[in-house]
Length: 115
Image (cartoon, rainbow, N blue to C red; front, side):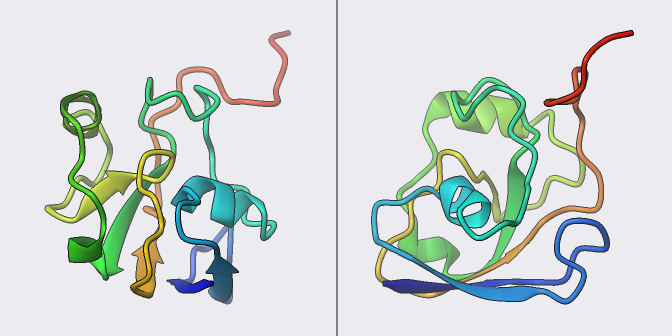
């Protein structure tokens, strides 16, 4: 198992968290599996930017982002050089420190019906 340190996020994880994930698990699935409800409006299909995270430590251990992910990241709020879509970033054997940005761009908030 690989350790993921999640830095505090005012809404999703106010105190931060330390979680474990099996190598090959997406960062998004690891977060969701540990009750950190990161948005994932496209159902983790690499079609939006709502699961954007910044990898503060361990970034080099991740496989390179594919072109589609890179194109989508260009639209993410708060993009940084070590940004990734958590649905596409697979945990390896190196511990990660991630930050969930304060804001996300989500045209249709998952789990909410239109009224």
